Structure formats: structure tokens, C-alpha cells
Length: 165
Image (cartoon, helix red, strand yellow):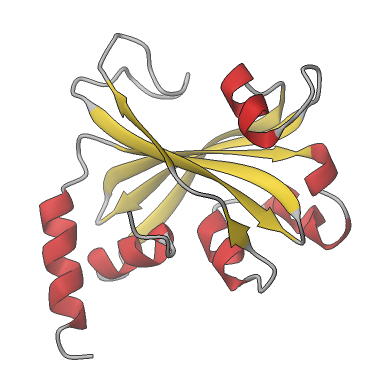
């Protein structure tokens, strides 16, 4: 439920042993649900980026970002070339950033992978998404907490790391 940077919290939780693995990045037609969240017309393309966020060598979060082409103009052209840099770091360092409320989903294991690059989930997983705006230009970020993600371990590490701040 924390509205701050998930990337920052994960980096703290794994003592900096954080890694972004890009699974795919291409121009695609977003899903109906994604188009609705972004108020995009049916045939609009967007840059879709799928990544895994690792903590301590363990895949913790699958993230899918949908960035409409009209968002990728002007100073935001840089979003086209994130490579293995975390999107969250860029979002939360931008003074124009605003975030709409979270939408939550419980994803049941149904034999369908979250991405063509991943195996199907073997356990239920929780996901959240929200629309961000940079200079009033929208993008959608969806984060799914994988079964290998241990909320208890992360919470303990965050509590411990901030105990002496």
C-alpha cells in the first residue's frame, strides 16, 4: 500500500543486491484493460516493457510498463532507452510526477504465464498497478509480487535497516 518507490524499498530490503532483468521491450497494442486505464483508443500502440526485479538473486517482482507513444516525446524520449535501469528510480526523481490510486488483483495460478518469457505461476500472487503522469503524460505500471517474494523477509529487513536511521 506504500505509495513511495517500490524500487527503493526493494533495494533497501536486499542490502543493495538489486537487479533489473529486461524480458522484453517492444511496440505493442496494449490490452483492453490497459487501454482503459490509460484512456487510449483501440488501435494506439505503446511501448511495453516487461522486467523482473531481483533481490539478492531471487526474482521478487514481475513488472509490466505500458508507455503510450505520445508520452515518449520531448524530454520523456529517454524512457525509450532505460535498458536495465529501474523505471521507478526515474519516476520518483521527476518533480512533475503524479500517481493515481492503486488497482489491486489477486492472480490465481491458471496455467497462463504472466509473460511469454516466464513459466506459469504455481501459487497465487498479488499484483497492483497505477497510472503515473510525468508532465501530465500518462504511463501505466503493473507490478506482480512473485511467489518467491517474501513479504516477511522484506518487512524485517526494512524495519531493521531503518531502526538506527
